[in-house]
Amino acid sequence: METNNLSNIGSKIRKERRVKGFTQSDLSKKLEISASYLNLIESGRRTITVPLLIRIGNELGISLKDLTVESNKRLLSDVMDVLSNELFEDLDITNQETTEFISNNPSIAKALLTLNDSYKSFRDDTQNRLEKLDVESSIRENKSTRLPVEIVSDFLQENKNYFDSLEKIAEKIREKIYFDEGHRTIGHSLIQYLLKEHNIKVKVASPEDSEKSVKFFDKDKKILFLSEMLTYSARNFHLAYQIGYFDAQLTIDKIIKDNKIFSEELISLLKISLLNYFAAALLMPYDSFLLKAKKYKYDIEILMHHFAASFEQVTHRLTNLQRPGNSGVPFHFLKTDIAGNVSKRFSLSGIHIPRHGGSCPRWNVYIAFMNPGKIHPQISKMPDGKVYFCIARAFEKGIEKYGMPKSFVSIGLGCDVQYAKELTYSEGMDLSNKNLETPIGVSCRICPRLDCQQRAFPPIDKDLKLDIISRGTSPYITI
Image (cartoon, rainbow, N blue to C red):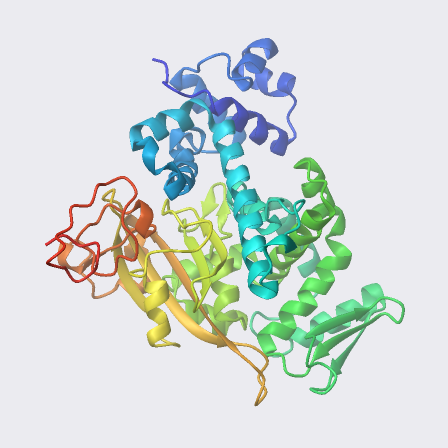
């Protein structure tokens, strides 16, 4: 039996093979096929039988679902989001056409996303400059690069936000630093390690000296300055980050080199992201963190107290638990400000999070702003019928000093509803009760729900039949 429309699988096999350090010859011997046949598979010039596909997955340590078209759902949603632009309104592109196009041309679909990101970047830059100077001729014509933050986001998504090499180096270093999880002496132990292993002193900066910076490392004097205004969990995180700066650089450089990333700006942003990953792995070790998460049914507040970490640190760490053979719930993660700007997004649950904001206002991640500090659970149903269990919490962020400007952010964490019973937040909720489901969408332009009272824009793929003498609860709701 042969699979259909799997021309994109070859590139995935090649990528996973290289990550595992196998040559084509190595893998072909394990699969008992010729290296030339494997080369044809990776080039997309041969279809693959299901038994062979399963064997490949076993050898590479990945599931059949990850290799097949299931893993293209996020790509499909992103492309549909792009095609929802009013520029394509007259083309009448159907969802079926989009699905077939992506199935047969995944690389071209990714190129389309890259082009769209560049367009968005150029458009936003143009708009910002016009608003600032109020002169159309002020636009720089050469500013049309794709946003590095989007490239890093896609990179983390492709790697499932799990980096085994960083987990291992964090475990090795942790063996040298003795401290009890969540104990008040963690910071002292990290400071002593920096002094002993790298001759780095740590000094606390006064509020007057640290208004514009929470951390500064003086390379010449070998002094790490940390703001006195940092919370205990934030201070520990910066200390762990600095340890990674010295001890995980080679590992991070190899990850970047293996993924053929050359842009200096992109490398810097990716290094920051991977150093943050290392810091979380050092403070919240994989096996212990996963064990506690399962024991307490992913109760974030218990994990915060046990590991002396913040809400954001814990929720972000929960998305890292994807070690083959020892994984946690596959979550999605979303961080947004009160204006709807999405600064972090990641999805293993299957839910689609828009690339450039403009998300559905029914998502609990936005509703949480109405009651900050409280965790808001929600059973969310997408237009395609998929149901997710989501929690969200909004909180104040910024330097804890009177008069200093602060911001409100909201973090959303969720999973497919099939995993909801593993979470303490679903206790007392009848997950089978359809009346408890909140109908949500991705964004108004690609949402088919014509009865939504919160619709801000009309759907791109439907003709509106409005009555000019009557009106529903929204301009785009038919009566």
